[in-house]
Image 1 (cartoon, helix red, strand yellow):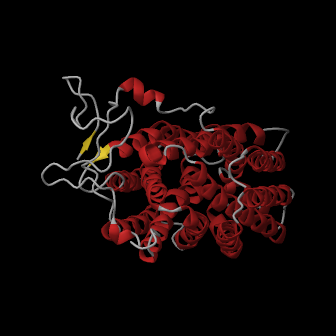
Image 2 (tube, rainbow, N blue to C red):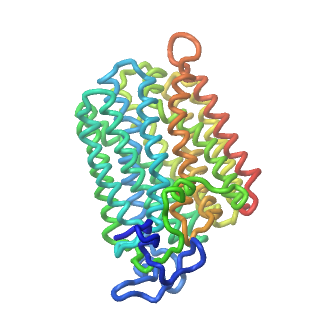
Image 3 (cartoon, rainbow, N blue to C red):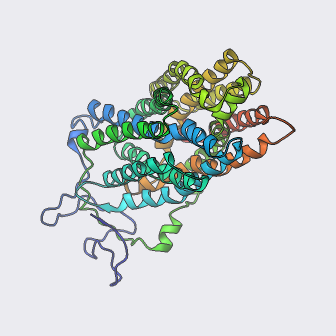
Length: 457
């Protein structure tokens, strides 16, 4: 297993032979003995149509479900419970813990994407990074569960965010590599709904063990490991040992790869900016959900799990309708932007309702609108991202990582900004202002994509 990097002789590890124009991936190349240069995996695709087979899609969705549960349940519930034990009453500290984890993934996500684009191994480009992510995510569990201080809890969450973020990104890169255009909306809808449902199921499960902190952190991770390994064991990643690059991966080139010229890919750039604004609004709400529910309904933090389970279970239907309906319909009618604006509008409406919710029925109405909006927006925006992705053949991992910045950068500053917004006024935290700001940002992001992206309807 090798990655194309500089060697002391000034040649890339791929060797000087078989050069192609700068930056290009030469496929197929005359294979060296024992190498398999063609990046194809017949068992994952139908040879007649080029469609990804149903079995591979089912395992992909299951793996996405597991990775989503392992990644989001700590963010949505477990960290708040542990933080309440270590530093009772310090709501703003959760924002700082989450921000540090997001900052780490912000730095490392493009690196792993770029390296996986250039990885040459018999196991393919994506699978080794998925395995590395699983291992790091598993190591983080005891660190978070047994953390004696906020500093150690932050370290554990950072490892968890990096590990599960790497595994999830590898699954996304596999989709960018393999899905033909007419399957993108439907598969994005399926993976989108799993990312909505996974934390719901996870919170319901850990709610039965809310007084057993180790189980609360370990259970989602175990499910994630099992489901991702099932995908890796069955769905093959094409042998990539035959790849040849002319451009060497230097430190300077790596740093430049973290950005791109918006003039060369304007639709990708506008989509990135719209997603960034939308996810800034979304992150404002998700960072403080546990404390929001506890304050609005006057509950203890550990007891929030029961309410979240009820509210979140109710949102499974809306998440399913939004993700599958939006993804399927966008493929069917050949339009993405109307669904993106609809999703952003629904999420904004849900935030408006939640901003003034002080009882469970009103809170459920706001949550259901939020769920429907997030699911619709996320599924179709992911399909649109795949539609406008630049340089798919050579650098899909790099551009998918850059796209991930639109979600990761808000994860760094939005929790800190949210803590400042909560401090507006006197007395209890100002969740009304927080949710109204989130509504405005989310709608603005959807509107920007709708008005600015030109190559996709």
